[in-house]
Structure formats: C-alpha cells, structure tokens
Length: 460
Image 1: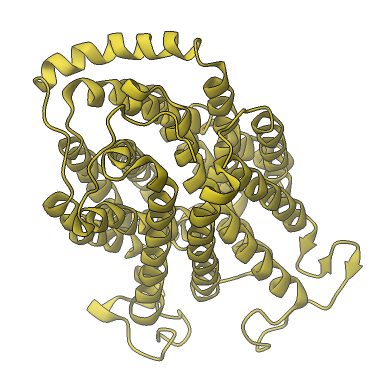
Image 2: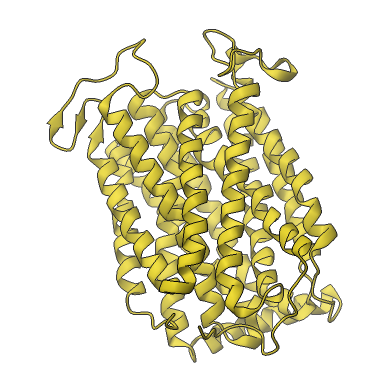
C-alpha cells in the first residue's frame, strides 16, 4: 500500500519498548473517558449531584460544550508550536498535569449538594482540556515511530491498549471501590477499600482520583522509553511561530481539498461520538434505573468489544483502507443510535414488553438486554473508527506539516464538539426529555457519513 502524509524520510523502526511506551499513553488516558465521561462519574453527577437527571444531562452538556470550544481554539495553534519546537513530551507533561488536577478535584462533588456543582464542572472542563491537548501531541509522535505501512497497525494497537486499560479501571472500581448503598458491599462482597462510604457515594466520587493516579503511573513508560523529536528552537520562539504556522496551515488546507473534506467529515462524526459517549451512560441510568454496578458492567462489556474492534480494525485498515473501516464503523454507530431511541423501560421498537421488577437480577428485562447488545456494538465500532481516522489523516496530510495537520485533525474533531453536547443540552431542556436530546446524534452521524463518502483515499 502507498501512504501519503508521512515524513519524506522513513523513520527507523523504534524498539519495541518505545512502541510499548507510546501505546501506554492510551492505556493511561482511557480511564478518563471510561470512568469520568461515560460510565461512572457523568451518570453519578446527573442522577445524584444535579437537581434531577434532565437538568444534569443539560448542564453536563453545557460544560462539555465549553471545554470543546476551548480545545477547538487551541489545538491547531499547539500543533503549529509542536512543528516549530519539535518537542512533544514537555507538552504531554504539562497538559497531563491538568488532567491529574482536574480529575482529582471531581472528588468534591457530593450527592445532593448543589453548591458543589460549579466545582465539579470547572474540574471537568480543566481535565477535559488537559486530556485532549495531551492527545494532540501523542498522536503527532506516531509517524516518527514506525514505517508508513505500519501506521494502521500501531494506531489500532494503541486504541486496543486504551480499551484494555479502561476495562481494568472499571474492574478496580466495581470490585474494590464502589459499594452498594443498601448492602455496603462491592460487587464481590467486600467492604470498599480506603474506608469509602457507599451511603455518601464515595466510591463513585473516587473515579476522579483513581483516574489521576492511573495516568501518573502508566504514563511513565512513555517518558522513559519513547524517543521524542529533537528540539529545534526555544519554546518562546516556537509559540511566536505557532500563530503564523496556524495561519499558514489553514492557507495550505485550501491546497488540499481532499484532506479538507475529510477534516470536515471528521469534525461532524467525531462530534456525534463525543456526545454519544458523554450521554449514553446518563441515558441508560435514567431509563432503566441502573446504578453504578450495572453501568460498570455495561461499560466493561462495551470496552471489551472496543478492544477487539480496535485490533480487528487495525488489521482491516491495511486491507480495506482507512476510509472503508471508518465508513463501516459509522454505519454501525448510526444504526445503534436509532435502535437506542426505539428502546424504553417497557418496549422495544413497537412491541410492549414486561419491564424489570426489583429482585429480577442484572439486566433482567428484554429492553435492558437489547441495550447491552447495542452498547457492545457501539464499542466494537467506535474503536476502529477513531483508530482508522487518525491513520487516514496521516496518509492524507502534507509530509512536512504532520504535527500541524494533526492539530487541524484535533480541531476538526473538536471545533464543533461543543455543538453536539450543546444541542443535546438545549433540546433536552426544551423538551424536558433525555430521549429528545439524544435524537440530534442521528444528524451528526448521517452528515459525517455522507461527507466521508466523497473523500478520495489511497487504495489498499
């Protein structure tokens, strides 16, 4: 296969420990998305900290939108800085610190304590900015580590590694930290470690500090083993050049209409995926009265399917091409959202079914089982979509502006990322319906799929 958008001189293959360290970034960062934004903390905030689930979904959407707007404004500029300065690791360290501080502060969100809502939202915004900006620089390291024909495989392994990290972090939460408020015991019948009080929902709140500690521990191999690009100039000079390089990149984008079309498509479908992950757990918890245990197990199943999906997608990338993998994944996500909207507590599509009753067991009703199956399909599709998208960007980008175009890639994935959560929040508040808010996701996936179909990609 021929690749475009990679350095003019093929990089010397990095040693395995360097690739291992790079892949562990996804492992280190994934609990933020798994524990905080999707399965543990976001549903806890909407159902326990906020006044009610509808308001919780709305204001969580507003906070996600604000963080996305700031990320959209900063990502391409930082990509230009990375191209000028050459260094990636110092920026990963700086923004990793924001992730750690913001995640740790989520502990202060107490149940039925509205005065803690502003603290939680500010901490969430800070942590989100740190996570996403650190990812920009981690992505920009990828083409310097392997030969062009190995990009798809490395990207898929990175995403799969991240999903495994997410699964293990969920296991830690469910087995040792989150206790049932009624029994006081964890999923395996233990008292929560560190004296966490189930009645005060301290296990749910501990998702923030655990995410911070997890990142600090598992980011270390990347700093120790993965080589960085040599410094080209002082950071102060690089920052001055960053502004001009951003302007330059946008001008150069006009010369690459095919890449521009892909970035616009990515902008739209990535926005839909952000919103789906941000509100999928909240929607499930309110629809079926799922607690942290149910959401955690649901998350584990979704993450496991995402692991296999990312691995399979990475290998299919070199057979079907990145574009083909992304389009198949988008089709599955679109079908999944439509199916979710057709499932309620006591119905599946047009059929009325018996709802679950107390004591029936885990995922006892048919709608719950169907929702779990849909979640597994979402996980299976999301991993390949994200992995193949960044590989496609590497193949389409100008060779000498890799980090800068990865900044534009982050921009395209974030420039309207505030719009999806914002629309979900607005429609949820306007209709007083969480289901109504979720309907806007159909639009994002549909438009993204149509635009991506127009992208001309290298053939496998």
